[in-house]
Length: 173
Image 1 (tube, rainbow, N blue to C red):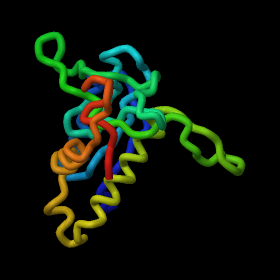
Image 2: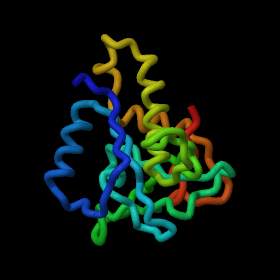
Image 3: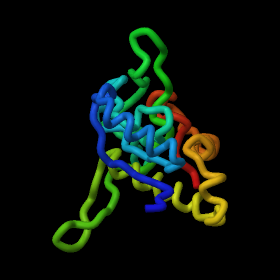
Image 4: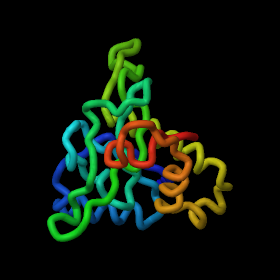
């Protein structure tokens, strides 16, 4: 399909579901940037959902318009390596995910909340960044690691929340 960016506003706790995990690895190995909601199981720590907890996926948490971590937003650390390893910092970034206006199925708009709302915001930012790469060069220059690095280095650190709540901070285009 010649896809560059994929958003998943889904997730689940089972990072041991090998067929699913291997499909994510296949997607990112083919330089498709995957953005995924981190989950709505906060405020407890270690509640990240898969695939957002994978290192090659951009995991997105949710904040409100006052730049406070949304109470529902899942928090790190990742549990992939436990009990014998260490937990990585997740989410990678946060974006607005509380009281976001979206479309209703019938007609009009409604207020939506969740990391599934924040994740497409980041996917949109990624698409804008991807669009500046000339299409003939895109597959040679674009990869999940470089895009994640650009988002993390460009993020605005929030005052107050720790790294397991906000990752690198609020995504900043």
